Figure 1 (spheres, each protein chain N blue to C red):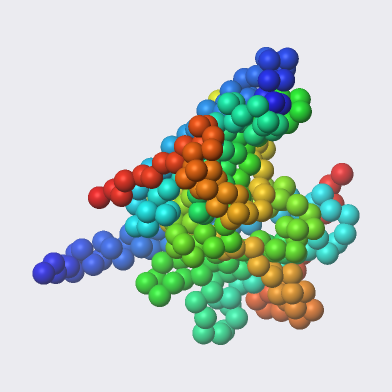
Figure 2 (cartoon, each protein chain N blue to C red; figure 1 turned 90 degrees about the vertical axis):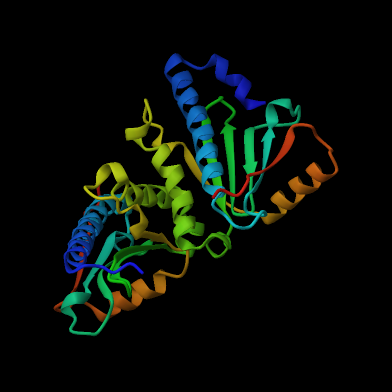
Amino acid sequence: MTVKTQDEEVQLAQNLKARNKEVEKSYHQITQAVKPLLTVFESKKYRTCIEVNHAKSGKDTNLDQEFICFFWNLTLATNKAGYKMLYFTYDEDALAKFGARMYNKALRQLYKHTMFEATKLNIEDSVRLNNPANVQSFFINRLANGENDFISISIEEKVN
Amino acid sequence: MNYLQAIHLPDRQKVRNHEIKKCYFKIIKEIAELSTSFKSENLRTRIEIDHKQNQNAQSEIYEVLTDYIYLCLNADKQGHFSIAYALNDCASVYLGQALYTQVIRILYKLTASSNANVNIEDCLQVFPYYSEVFDDARNIVRNKEYNYYKQIIENKGL
């Protein structure tokens, strides 16, 4: 039977903390990198970003941060083992309506900022890509509820 | 066969095509290696098609079909190469979400500008997956209809 010493437990906890910090950093890098993808659209709806800081919501949740737009949802959450994870879901209707070009570009940013060469620690296994699903209705509901202490809504400037 | 147009392209485009082709085969190799970790023989099976031997091929040059992913090295009418991929909707169920994400990472990692001599990031195209295509290919292999279809079953790794 392998028994962890107190030193080993401290080391493991420190490693986990460092890894989680790196995942969180990647989350922010991805959200900054994907916003410019929205600036090509004429309609404000497609340039709207909703950012949710679940940590400030006061609710008991494993969700940390969330980025939602018409096209995708990127969620930073902590799993049961205490590992921060990134969950990415692209909207299935947007994929059908606008084609896969935007999907491709968004995925590239997701993988770029979590690849081994781009981070201090290997966090490649922190990413979970979901099948395209219904994100739009979720986006519209959040938009309808408006901003508050932990939800901010912004519109990216159109770039010609 | 569109890829034959590639000889008329300017050098810059030829270099780009070469890089995309090289990347395509690296992707196949990495996915093949990853597949040795799959328990199911069905998931370790792939069919490789060399369309250079297919007189009727238009845009396809090489294709790989599995139960979870479809990959194709294509050439458009001007001879410009691209890599098309399609993922089975059930792929994340078959592989588990971690492996599913890892398979897609292989595509984006190997086509990243940091990993290629020229920027080929826009060479990837996403298409819907049709399981009938894989089923048809399996039948072709079973009936030995075309010798440019090859079925490979990776051994399960330790």
